[in-house]
Length: 442
Image (cartoon, rainbow, N blue to C red; front, side, top):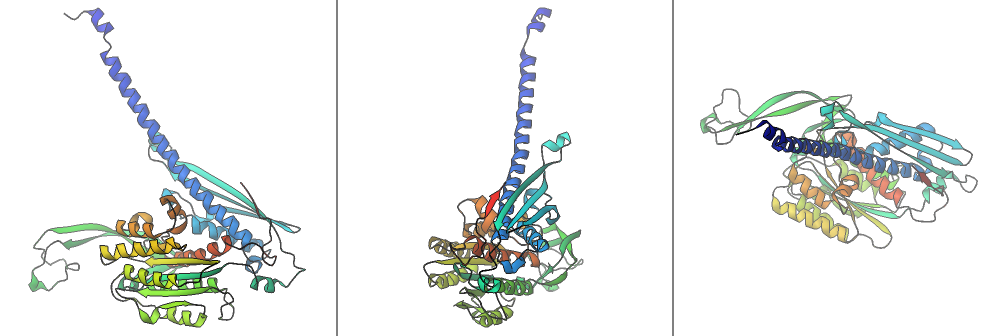
């Protein structure tokens, strides 16, 4: 018999209620930690980007901007954008969010860079908090060069940079003939459905498996998926291979500090263009001859399949013969699609590891994925993250794994690789135009 006293003293319901509430609190706390963790990652990436921008502005040759505040502002914003993708971790960052304050007083220049963005939330959005504001700033102060010592142009020519040997392994497969946006933004305009048949079609139709009309009959299992369509707004549509030519020419000009179509440095470039084979006409070992390299870059063409393993191995052989001693060795590996098979993947990773073991900095570039990092096929991510320098995944993603979504993004990435490598690795001493006494405060 259940008495009133028994009901009052029973704690079964209370324990269940307390357990349920405890679990709810645990889930909410975990969710909030995840949201703040994402915001923390965005801030770390942001801090890295503005630190790199501050150093690049401080160490840039006087011939780049001099004391022009508008130029220094533009330069700072450019370097922030190079190191902080606009959709990083879902944030709403854009170059318009970069505040730059330049103060020139006497023989000293002070540049303050301030960046803000909003990181989206998942769990906190349940309570109406859809994002978290992330902000970071840095100030770099440096001395102007003593213009009384030498003519500025003479100083720039003799700036005490370490010499560089740069290897560029570039995809010239058939898919590089597809169109992309250059000088504008890919804007989503809608979606369409694309279908294909898992099994063979009725051969009498003579229809390509992946291009069949509305009246074609699929005799097997039909598979359909939604494809997002984009439009190039504010730019021009060109082929990926033409974008590669333009970006490569900019990279070469930056590497050689070109004046009048000539190399003004001791730097050298090696080219390996590839499809399923090495393209000998556009491949060359290390050379400092500007005209030779421009001629080969202008001949880049989109043909054939993709064997990045063979191409990277070929480039590794060039790199093994690169100059030794105080020479910066950099390899840049670019593709817009997966290799022909796993054997090529493994060969590519092995070649990258061999170069890194001998002190080469390796940058990897999956190119032309307008929907960002998540749209890059997992197989390409695996190979190119393995190839990239850096001891951790976050270090690779921050510094050595790049995924330019458009043609002008590729230009910025290739130029940025040369500039940041050269500027951050300036050898001690020099002729005085480094400004000296670079001080960074946060």
